[in-house]
Image (cartoon, rainbow, N blue to C red; front, side, top):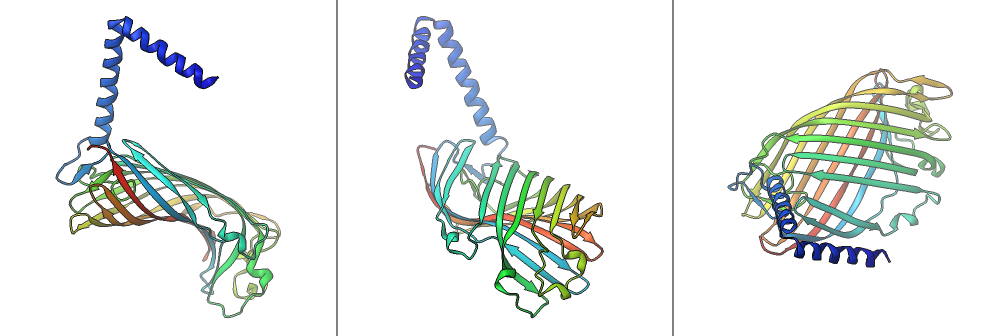
Amino acid sequence: MRKLGLISMFFIGFNLVQLSPVKAQTVDTLMQVINTLTDHFLYRNNDTNYIENYGNQVALKVVGLTKINYFRVRDLTNKTSVKYRPERDLNLGLGVAYKFFSFDITLGLGLNKNSNLENQRSFDFQGRIFSSKQYISATMQYYQGYNLSDVFGVTVIPNDSSVNREDIRTTNFMLQYMYAFNYTKFSLKAPFVFNERQKKSAGSVIAGVTFSIYSLTADSSIVPIELSPYLNPITHLNSLNVFNIGARAGYMYTFVFAKHFFATGSLIPGLVLNYGDYALESGYELPTGFNFSLNTMNSVGYNGTRFFTGISYISDIFSVKIAKKQGFTVGSGKINGFVGYRFGKK
């Protein structure tokens, strides 16, 4: 019924336009305005010697990706640390890009269900918007169940109950905005969205702001009991809640070779102001202060007139100071492989 209603409305509107030249002219004027605005956002101040735009073509791609999520607690006094990450899964799906619109839909293959974590749960959304000169990202991650993936500075081997932690749960919500200053010659979209092509090597200073809320809870200390003598007792936390806001500035560069091949790399460090609390047997406030953060966006591949393919890696890291020489690091991101083709006239 809803579909019939929409079709009826379409034909009624069409007949009104046919009967009224004034309304037809209004519709034509509106479409011209929309096209003008679209072209303005797609081609705005681009130096065509450096950037070629494919926004009027429909780009379809097959995507394979894996999500990144981990945390590490560090004892700088004893030079020891432990790192946890959930069991990884491989996602496959399709992506489409047209004009200023782009999105990917992927589904997990369930490879992580064969792990030792029987009750693991996860929800991982990572959305990104690229314009000619702006980058906006939103991350929402919830994970239950982590594996002890790395131990540094300790030779003791924990038992299985310490390695597989179904009781650890984390939530990570993050927003980020960044601006590319040399947007006339450097394309943010070319190495990641592929509705543009970087014709000549170029780079840009990137700067922006970031905001995040992170929470971790566990039934007992995240430091395995076998490793507890090697890490400061203040790192033996079972809860952490942190809010941070900060700024970043760095550089991104795309190197173009053999006309259509490219390699893009970036380092965008920053400082975040942390505020929150943590718990051992009782609760404590985190020391309020500035800590290090880092964003990196990298891509390598082939970007032809029609065909394109490559691999990209995007990562966000921020650190939290628990006490003097005792810290906590959170990492998120994704590794993305893709192959695609553009349809339509330029």
